[in-house]
Amino acid sequence: MDLNTVKELSHLVESDSVRSWQAGDSWLAGGTWLFSEPQPDISKLTDLKGFNWPSLTASAEGLEIGATCAISELHDFIAPHDWIAAPLLKECCRSLLASSKSWNGDNTSAALPAGAMISLTAALEGVCTLWPRHGSPREIPVIDFITGNHQSALAPGELLRSIWIPASALRKYYTLRRFSLTASGRSSVLLVGTLCPDSGRMVLTITAATVKPVQLIFPELPSAKAVHMAINEQVPFDHQFEDPQGSPMHRRHLTYHYAEKILQELAMI
Ligand SMILES: Cc1cc2nc3c(=O)[nH]c(=O)nc-3n(C[C@H](O)[C@H](O)[C@H](O)COP(=O)(O)OP(=O)(O)OC[C@H]3O[C@@H](n4cnc5c(N)ncnc54)[C@H](O)[C@@H]3O)c2cc1C
Image 1: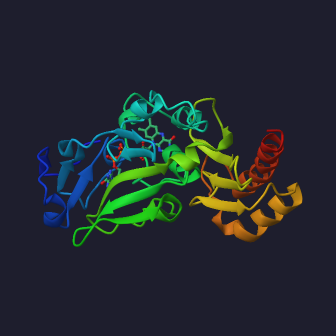
Image 2: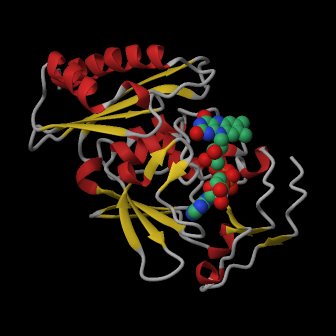
């Protein structure tokens, strides 16, 4: 797509780039969304690669994912052996309609319901670090960062710097269920359940089926009926997403179905 309003493409990123951001500026990550449709309000693109942020930084406390980390790098990450939830990284990397181009793209700031990196980082209790235009960096859980279809908590010009995944979440059992119209297509429903081996707490994260991620938390493994009721109470029907990949009714049906399957699988651990 020719972006005929763009007059400037900057690869040079200065330390005060966030403060000097102006209306008409836009951060450029992989460009898969930016270059896929007209952008009449954008006159300058600033390529985030200029920041040279580290992609992945692992420590005993957890994993920091830089906002410019390529999906392929996350896919190939070799985790410590006790991070038993680490295979979820690969599973989510394969849960999107990925061209070689989108494998190099960021997925979280675009805040699309089918964003598999949103599913991953929300399920693993990720926390975003944001660089506001004015003031100190701020933190916000991924589950609250996404506020709707293509809507996030980012203020104009604000930058997503990184997402922190705590090691405690990476040490949980997990299971994933996903529906897509084609084998490697865009997700229309993606649910992840995690189970804490110490406390028995279960977390069910619903994505792609809803306009924004929803997380249901149970202090211990619930009954199938309790999960069904929690979905009814905490996922209003008008939160079900609708697009050519599936109707709200279809997505709701699969949400109940997969939640039950996840529960059965976690109960067998
Ligand atoms: C073939 C193909 C398949 C696709 N499949 C899927 C799919 O299965 N699921 C899905 O959800 N999407 C899919 N998409 C859409 C696209 O890949 C996503 O929207 C992706 O998130 C865009 O990432 P990007 O790095 O290319 O972002 P860009 O297009 O560079 O940026 C997207 C937006 O986010 C902003 N932004 C980027 N990084 C930051 C940051 N660090 N801080 C603040 N703002 C930032 C940009 O300014 C822009 O507004 C697909 C696209 C293509 C072309």
